[in-house]
Image 1 (cartoon, rainbow, N blue to C red):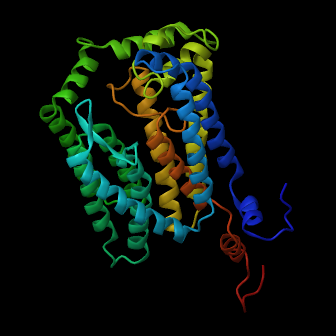
Image 2 (image 1 turned 135 degrees about the vertical axis):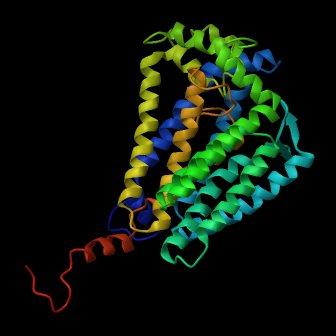
Length: 384
């Protein structure tokens, strides 16, 4: 245990970090590692790998992910902003590069091979994009003559165009929803709210007619016709799990669910541990988002407020999309469950998000001094 009397970076970090957030992030990653034992062996055997191939890789990914999260949590808000700008520049450059030399999987170019590792640049773009937009919105709020909102709109247009070019409609919707939420918190005029709504509806309609795979997924979702094997098996796994599940290792339907260790890990959890376990998992994500929004509400610095709110919204909306697909409430879309699903890029990137949240929610001395100043009687004014 670190004493409050100690001085130094580690002691200062320990007593200023939001330990509830830290414990929540690590606990969710632990649940994800546990579920990898249930979900991944069948997937590995289907493609000719040894049963615990993905479990071992999941464990290997957790080490750099937690290291990144803890390392970023030491940063000051200014360092968070600078790190995000650098990360955004690199990820956007890689997103352009992936269109030409990227690995094509299921009709999309989203991955690029670097040093023997498959990296999805858009995953790293998301937290950096949120922080940079938060800075732009905050600068406009601080000095209206600075066109921060306009720059944020231009940046969003660039990001959305690159995502559509891959194409990755799910990430485009997620990014749009988070950006729109931040813009709303920054005081978006009603005209922009209407334009954003019209633009979003127009974008979805265009995607339906331009991209055949989007139209196919929406048609299958609306009519229930066609190849619905993924959704049907996921639903069957959830139903078979009932309230308390079949027990660890006792799942049967999970063995035939495609992408059981990534996009449909929630269904595997339902089959083996039951609906009650899944409700608890949803509650954890809900508490995480509400705690982040509570931090943002109390925060007096515009940049910190917009960034924290945007980052927790990103995690929350991504969770809603993943769980909604598993429950057949949304059309099928390949998107991981944050901190739970297998995936190197996804896990490291979501830990970048977690690290930024931890850094921006620390109880810093300047914030405590500001709080005390609210109750200080101004010089020359009689105390009541």
